[in-house]
Amino acid sequence: MSAIASEGVLELSVPADPALALTARMFAGALAEHVGDGVSSDDLKLAFSELLAAGVDAGSDSVAYRVDLGRGEIVVRGANISSSDQSGVEEHERFARGHRSDLLGALFPRLGTEGGVIRLPIGHE
Image 1: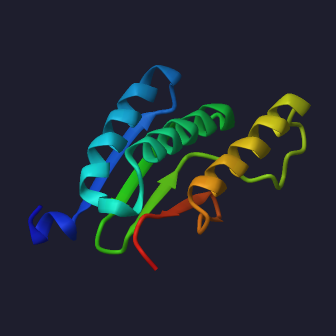
Image 2: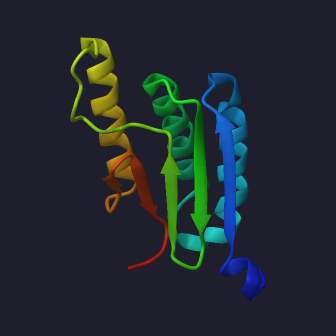
């Protein structure tokens, strides 16, 4: 891997459609080759498909993944894993969101959410 690739920015934006889960997973698998030992390919694939599912569940138009290798983070827009402001959300949906958030938190313990933006750290502390 070149120094340019290790410090690069990679982006994928897909419509929030379950049919595109494989596309998100393929991107995550390819990304794993650039991340190194910090995160497994399987963890990235699972996270990307769960984030796409969160976007579908939230009624988003699209889910955008922006990977900044230099900063060691993935920023995701269009996916909602927040457990706050769930008025009008059915019980089964609250259950799914809560467990999705728990799963992503287990895969990425330093995961952060702020204002509809999800940050997944992929670098070493």
